[in-house]
Every structure is written in structure tokens, then in C-alpha cells.
Image 1 (cartoon, rainbow, N blue to C red):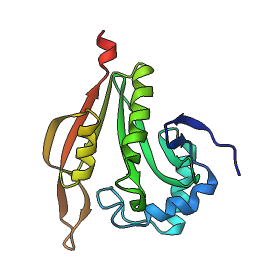
Image 2 (cartoon, helix red, strand yellow):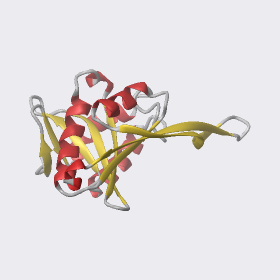
Image 3 (cartoon, rainbow, N blue to C red):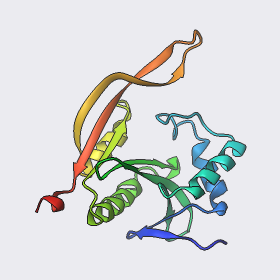
Image 4 (tube, helix red, strand yellow):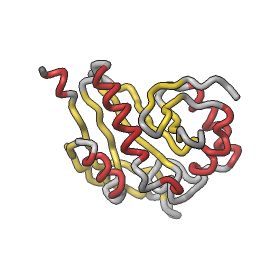
Length: 179
């Protein structure tokens, strides 16, 4: 087992960098059509997951979420650095662990850490149809700032026409910075 680089911890979770041993757990959720329904990629094959894992290991922006009790890697949080002291947050979790508060718990840990480090603003983009995602953002104290209509597409139909989608933009400001 490789040494794990721990980024943060919460009551039930270890938030860490990806390691090669994560391949099976990663494949388990990235190959699930329901899990990746709102992502800009289709369910991944095992070979595609292997390539994806190499990228995740190489970047500091993708953080694996591991259960403290079983050490199973159950999902990830994305924290991408953006201009103007901002971060973009995202999350994808294994469907078998939905509804247990793991996404909220891991996001809270990252948000607290990012704001303590001086980040000014954290934002997220999500599909308006992904009610669980935007409800989580609202529960975390994010405010909806925009509803972009038909601003993005990931796929095309059989005739080659773009399948346009709407986007919600949510953000949370670091109020400590204003004190």
C-alpha cells in the first residue's frame, strides 16, 4: 500500500490524494451511468478508468474521499483553482453511499480549510435537473447566482446537433475576509 497524502479529515472521512490502489473503487462509481448522469463524460470502461486514475494521481485538484471505518474510497471532491482567489468545487460519489451525508461532510471540511487559507470565493456549476446537487449546495450555504439557459453541451444527437443544457451557478463567499 502506498503512503497516503492526507489533505484533511472529518469525523467519518479521510480526504486524501489518489493512489494506484484506488482503481477498483474508482471504477465502481465512474462506470455507473446513474453516478455520471450529469458529468461531461459517459460511464468509463476499466481501461478508461486506469487512464483517469493516472490523471487524478497527478493533480492536486481531485481529492479522494475514504471512509475511516473500512478505508473504502467512496467518491471525490474537486477543488479547482480559478482567477481572483476563487475555487470551483464539484463532487462525485459512489451511488451505494448516497444519502449518508458524506458529500456534505467532505465539502464542509474543504470549504473551511479553503476559507482559512484565504480563498475569497468558492463556486459550483450544476445541471438544474440535478436537484440533489443544488440542494446540497444550498444546505452548505451557497447562493444561486445565475441560471444560464442552454449555455453548454456535452453530447450531440444522431444528426450531429448539440444537445444544449442549462446551468445553475452557486457561490459562497468567505465572510471572514470581510471582518
